[in-house]
Length: 439
Image (cartoon, rainbow, N blue to C red; front, side, top):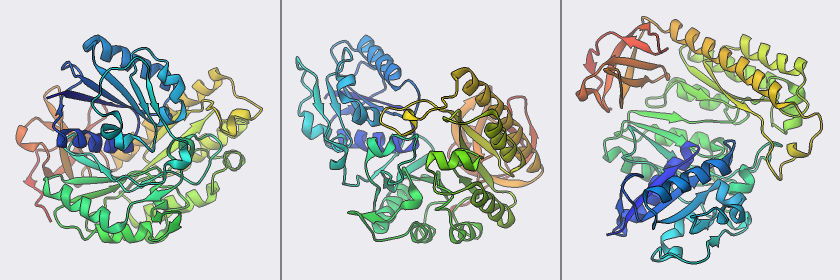
């Protein structure tokens, strides 16, 4: 029985796909093992959004070969689609598979026998037209369920359409089937994921269904206590969806809504499909209907043309907005994007200074949000996340809590009262009072 190990870089979508591919191997009789357990095969799922994708890939390959010198190393994922030749030249790599090939790697690589020359199986991105269903299972307390892939937006800074192709989706019926399978395993929370999930509903280039209708249908699935929307564009987060989540049985009051810039000048340069006024409208709507809702924000600093004044526009905009935390990205040039050709490049030192300012702001926002919720009662899904005698988990509105460790709490939903913020920035809770029964 050949042993296979997986390593995933990047987003929730990558985790869902790695997990699905690993199940394909197990169904074919392979033994899934940890990275350090001398595997015969390594599958490394890469990301192109994170900086230094090449360095990270090389480092993991080097580590894999150190652990198991005769192993077969395969690279898949966004970086593999964007730069297959570059990856094929990394010492120790046996095969590189693109977006259209990665779900067929067992079939394409046959017996994973070592070859003299690295196999590169990466079609042009136009060939990636099939939606491959995927979800993570057994890896963590919550499951990432892929409902959509690819993107038609073409923002100036982004390589995702080049790495994943055009927008395409699963069907509502197929998503519901996956949700029922996940529920049967005892998982308490499903996180819906994709590249641009608000664009859900496109099959073979035609829009057949809507994301709102998927949300309505999933809310009726028995056996799942929580459903969470991972990230949704502000122009696709409609009042209809917000209003439904506010009175939903299962969807939690947590929205992650990419902003990227608080300056309309920069938003236009980026090719985003909204202006800051629409973003304010969405935040206001959420907070009016769900005052306790958590709102996370993606923001990019140092985009070409972002002057000190325009950055301060973003800073002040975010400072005044009723949001809960930020994911801050320092702009980095990506080959074959419009932004890489733009003038008025912001020096890296300035980009880093701006990132630091926004990360400090994020901590202030998070602490304010946590403080506002102290004394209130929420349900916490406790995870296998133990540190210093404390077990951790998240409330429905994404507050990270710490409680005295009890192994019986893992993967349990408990009603708790938020007590105080500890020195690590997590919220201590009064002792969990009762198990939150499944619907």
